[in-house]
Image (cartoon, rainbow, N blue to C red):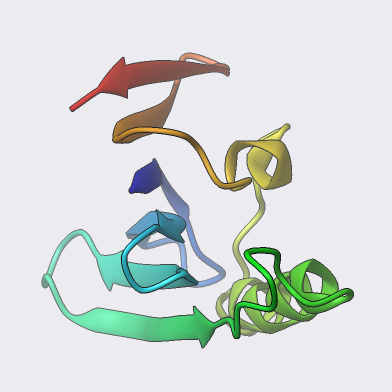
Length: 108
């Protein structure tokens, strides 16, 4: 499983936490956005993927990006540089955090 995590402000100026990534067992991408002040989930979605011969269907990645971008736009969230590159399926279990303007990867 890969977990890409960052905190930022939304359109309302409130701090939110974004956690997204790839889950190997379920073969899907996921996105959860929560309010840092209340802990309330603002967005939660799994982007299912049908495996064909061990590879994702052509165009699936574009569909994931469109779905996630809808959430980011609805909540007024700006993405850190390189966010989409970090979401690609990773081998092993890793947490990737946006800290001080760069990505830090840690195995879990």
